[in-house]
Length: 304
Ligand code: HEM
Ligand SMILES: CC(C)=CCC/C(C)=C/CC/C(C)=C/COP(=O)(O)OP(=O)(O)O
Image: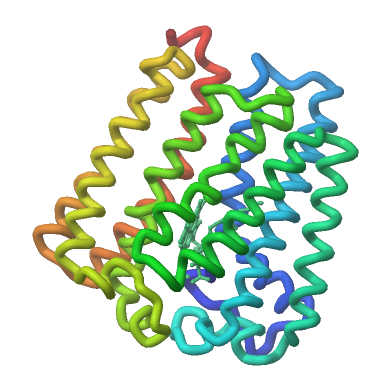
C-alpha cells in the first residue's frame, strides 16, 4: 500500500527507497491500533516493567509489519509497475533488486520476531508471524489475484494488530481483543473499496479482480453502504459489553454515522472525488475510533 501522495522517488536516497517499501503511513496506523490493544489490556497506567514490554512489542510489531509490506512489494513488482498509484515504487522501477528487497524484508522480520520472542512472549511472536504469512503470502500471493473477496478474507490479517497488542501484555487472546479485531475486519472492505472505485482502471490494467472491476461500480457502492452499517453495529459492542463507556459510545456513533453518510452519498450520486473523500474519511474514522477507545479507557471510572 502506497502513500496517497507518492514521495519524490526520483530523488529518494537508498534509505528512503527501503523505508518506502515498508508502506510507512499504513503501518503507522497498524502500530497505533496494536498500541491501543496493549493499553486496553492493562487496567490503569502501565507499571515500569510493562513499559519495557510495550516498547519491545511496538518495535517488534512495527518491524514485522514493515517486513510484510516490503515482501508484498517484492511479489507485486510487475503489478505495481502497471498501476499509476504504485509505479513510483523502487521495486516497480527496478531500482531495488529482488535480492535486496528479500534481504531487507527478511532482516526486518527476523529482528522483529527476535524482539518479540525475547522481550515480549512466544505467543505474540507466533501470532505476529501468522499475521505476516496472512498478508504477505495468503492475501498477496493467493487471494489477491484470485477472487474479488480477496480483501474481505485477507482483511483478517490487517485486523490482527489489537490482538497482537493484547497478547503482548496479557499472554493470551481475550474477547475484548477479538472485538477490536472484528471492528477493523469490518472496516476494511469499505476502506478499500472506496479506493478501488476511483482506481478501477488501474486495477483492470493490472488484471486484478477487485470488486469494481468484476462486479461494477453500482454493486461495489451498495456493498460499501451495507458494510458501513454492519460496522456501525459492531462498533457498539465495546459499550454494550461494558468494555468502554459513554465517551467511546458517542464517538463511535458520530464517526459511524459519518461513514454511513459518506457511503449513502457515494451510492446515490457517484464521483471519483467523493470516493476519494470516503476513503480518506475511512482512515480518520478508524484513527479516531481507536483514539476514543484509549481516551475512554482512562476516563472510564468517571464516565460510566
Ligand atoms: C487487506 C486489507 C487492506 C487493504 C487491501 C488496504 C488497501 C489500501 C490501499 C490500496 C491504500 C493505498 C492508497 C493510495 O496510495 O492511494 C491504503 C491506504 C491506507 N490504508 Fe489500507 N488497506 C487494508 C488494511 C488497512 C489496515 C488494517 C489499516 C490500518 C489499521 C490501513 C490503513 C491505511 C492507511 C492509514 C492508508 C493511507 C496511507 C497514506 O495516506 O499514504 N489499511 N489501503
Ligand atoms: C505483522 C503485521 C502486523 C502485519 C500487518 C500486515 C499489513 C501490512 C496489513 C495491512 C494491509 C495492507 C498493507 C494492505 C495493502 O493492500 P495491497 O497490498 O493490496 O496494496 P498495494 O496495492 O498498495 O500494494
